[in-house]
Amino acid sequence: MVKGNIEMLAELPKKYKPRKTIKKGRGMSCAAIFTLLYFCNTEYRNTFYGTWTSKTFQKYRFDQGSDRTKFTILTTVHRSIWKSFEVEMEEWLTHSWDSLHQEKPDWFTESAIAHIPSDMIPHWRQGSVREEAGEKETIILASKRRMSVLEGLGSAVGFAS
Image (cartoon, rainbow, N blue to C red; front, side):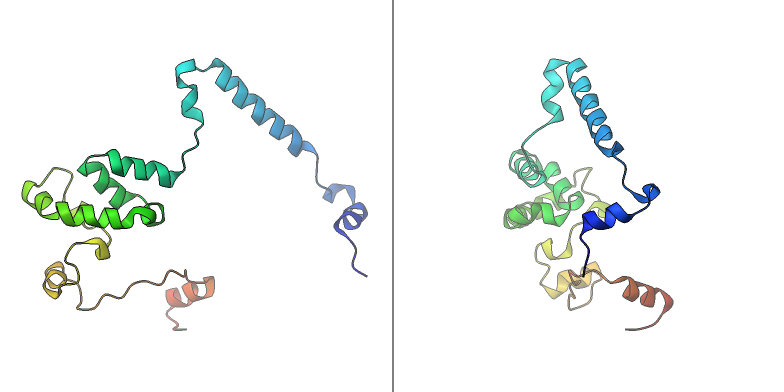
């Protein structure tokens, strides 16, 4: 017969039983946060909490921001965050690609361009553009599944799976 968790905890020696100090720790952290908010300048209290998610905040930045802001979102924010407005991002990049190359703003450098996902680069499907960038004729997209620990160790040691 399988014993329940409570019965198993009752049988454990005292040194293995969970302590009740965790609840005290939560109370102290809540007290610290309330103390911080109490002594904080009232005009800055709203900066400690908000209802925006990262996705809605990045969408707002994309809609209201300059070309530099949009480029920063594209090159530094994880794709899963801006996936919901990826089509708009691609349209913006296609529309402004030529002007960015002609104007050459100080933030539009070769190293920054290297951080653009290759499937977002306008005209990427044309072979001449890929050849100019030094890419192969076919694009092999990486699998979304991460390697297991054993696969990673095997590839590091040189064993093929």
